Image 1 (cartoon, rainbow over the protein chains, first blue to last red):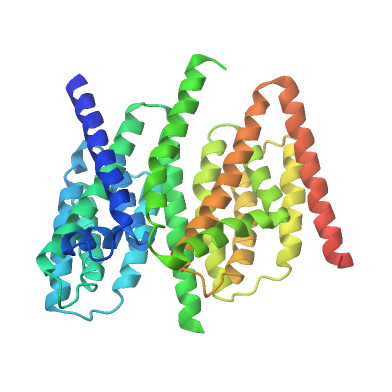
Image 2 (cartoon, each protein chain N blue to C red; image 1 turned 30 degrees about the vertical axis):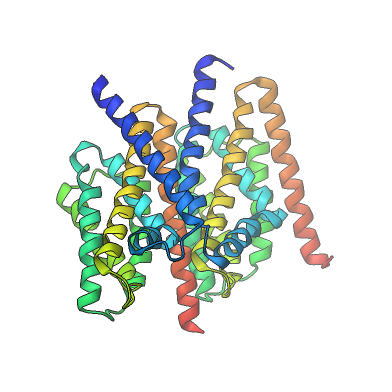
Length: 205
Length: 203
């Protein structure tokens, strides 16, 4: 058990270190290169960061069976971005992305034990939709592969961050901390629902 | 405070601190996100009728103890957001301001009398009021603000008000604290009464 815990702590430290780096990178986001532009693109938009983080929380909550999800999610993100280059203009992607926050948040709040294929299927589906939305930001002068790699890494970092935090907290095995994770999911679901409501209002007007 | 308690508090604070960067990070570099976020954060806090009712929800949860204390903060935001959806869709609920004032009176009263109904009744009472509160906010959702950061601020503010109520409710462990808690509930009910009277007199 001890080596695993040390591993988790080391992972947390690594991810935190990566994050502090990202914060520095923000001050010079313009013209910093296509890789960083891709890395920052999902990180500077709450509609991406929130579901990414929710997927990490859900992964941590689901336990060991689903730990491969961040990697799968990152690969799906990159595939989605590639798909956007090949086939631009798919409608309702933003709607799917809002629904991803609502759905992942609700699953965290409900704290169901999900069947692994369902869970990995969600990671794949939402990875593709978020990747697609990010891919739409790639312009002609950019090196697309660098941008896409950056998007994939951002997905890996944010979901990994959520996973490590949740895993660490749940390992404490204190009852109310399990609830704190569920409350976080409930907040994320509520945010998703309110955003859907506003979108509705915009469409209706 | 025992060492075990201070450990828990420390762990909670570090959790909040760890979660912090992910939120803070998202604000940098995009102009109107911050404006939307702050507007959302302010909205529930500047309506005092809303504030006292949310705090009462947390206090009552703490009085009821497990499992209500955990059920309320998990379900309330989602139910309230559902009310928000109804409000944004323009589905009319008559007497919404009266409903909010009444919710403060009822929730404050329940705390004052330390009422312990079965869990499902408590859930229905709180759920109905959650829809009222959400509806009022949903109807006022600004169309100019960045939708997601506004919603994030809004949900965080409401959830924090519950947390504040639960924190106040911790006093319930001690006999004197329990009395203060009930007195607090009575104050909230009086506040609700004030808002109700003001609504009819039109002050």
